[in-house]
Length: 184
Image (cartoon, rainbow, N blue to C red; front, side):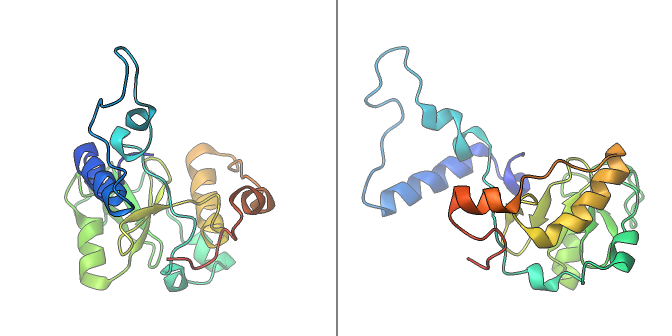
């Protein structure tokens, strides 16, 4: 996945440092305690590297329409242009109304749609990731059963085959939590 919602790695690092500071003062100055030539693994993984952890739950999943046959047949092809500016790339599918709108890196029409109408869940046609604007976070389509139908249809349309899914039971056992629970 890419960095969340245009946030750069330096702002993510600052947030991580604030979290560590607030959790018992475990903040470490960069490079402190490392021998010459050693690499701090914390700098290679996580927010400092621009990688983000997708959420395994979201309180806004209740805004999704029922995942019936009618709803998933409304998923347009992944090469659909933005319905406002007709830009052909970097487009997102609103998971509530199925409008296709461009990303914040083009003309920000998906972001405007969220701000104007309140539809907060969207699927990127670029990488099929799902973003919740209200949570300001990516959502794990492998762990959230409610997202699987629309993700599967988008994957079929983009690649011509069903996506490989991890089993929900394996996810539950490995994480110790229910993948579709409403943990904030």
